[in-house]
Every structure is written in C-alpha cells, then in structure tokens.
Length: 236
Image 1 (spheres, rainbow, N blue to C red):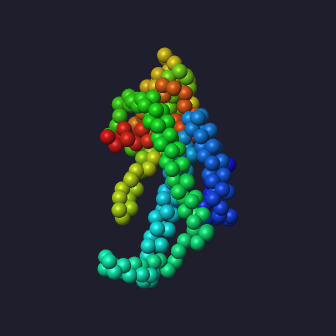
Image 2: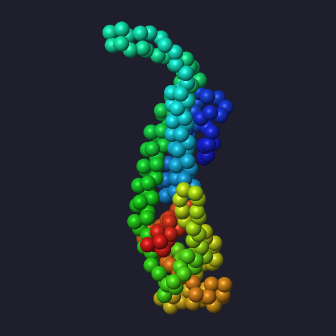
Image 3: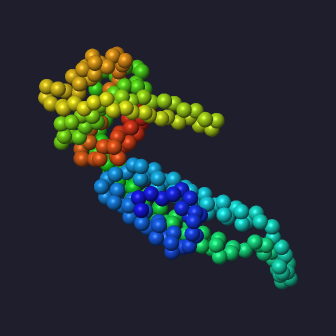
C-alpha cells in the first residue's frame, strides 16, 4: 500500500487486525523509500499521520473525560463518593483504542528512522555562495551538484515571509531553469555570468551552490533538503 488515507482509522471497516494490516503494508512502502534514501513526500506524510493519530487519541480522551458521571457507591472508610462514567467504551471504541495504541509507536519508529536518514544526508551537503552576494539575497539561483557528477542543476529560488496571527514563517519556491556541465573551464562563476546574460530578469542575483558528497535522489531528497539548507543559510 503506497498511500494511507488521512482518515484511515475511522473509515470503512473498523477492525484492529484489518487496520493493522493496512498500516504495516503502508509502512513497508515507507521502508522501501527510506532504503532508497527517498525522503519526500514520505517523511512529511508520516508526520501528518502521526499528528492525526495523536490528536484522535487526545480528542477521544477529552470527550470521555467530559461526559457526565453518576454516583455508583460510597466509600465510608475514606469518606469518598465513587463516580462512574455514564458512557463506557463500547466494542467499536475499544477497537479504535487498540488501533491507536498500536499505530503510535509504529509511526514514532519510522519517524525516528527518517530523522536519522535526514541528518545523515544533510551532513553530506555543503553550501557556499557563488561570486559576490548582493544585499538582497531572498531570490536568485540555487546550484545543485554532486561532487562525483559533472551535472549542475540550476534553479531559480525565492524566499517569502508569511505572517499569521500567531507567528511568522518562511517559505521557499524553486523553479528548474536548466542543467550545465561543470568543468575546469566552466566554473560556477562562469555559469552564473552566463545565467545573468541570458536571464536578465535577475540582473544582480544571489547564487549559492550546494554540493552533495554522496549520490542522493534529486526530486525526492536532494532538492527538498537543499531548500531547507538554503533557507537556514540565508536566514543566518
């Protein structure tokens, strides 16, 4: 199973063994991607599923705790009145609880594994500016290349600041431009000069190169990682 519906726990047939099979089939697909060092969108989906399950657990607990109680007995030795919930978990809710209890540690296990792979791959990325960096560096060019590969992929990038009532956060957009073959004569500085000549909408662009010391899948991992590395570097 390559995907998991956000409502996978509560949709269709609610049965622990059936949902367990669904989850394990999906996580097998996740493991295959992780083995191939393909982190996105798999890692982001895992985070979403984990948050959804935790939220479902908390909402179920809140609902149950807020439901009315009734007096069931009196403990005269301790001078206490004992209450019981008017609503007790029925069989369906017990199945949901079983599914939640099983799935949370499974998601945590794979999230931990994904984080380890992310940190390992990020440690093999090096970022450096190409030529002189202008004062305005929130847009420009991003060069992606592997040290053992001559191809350099060029992207336009733009960093935008978003504001919400509670916080500010940054977003980065990239657009593939072209590929160059790097060589002793065709340096990153030469490539930047050629980009300025043929793409005049950015007459004085910032440019950064991110080199990978190992081979990394471009779309599923290298580009998403590079965007985060670039945002961090520019922000600092």
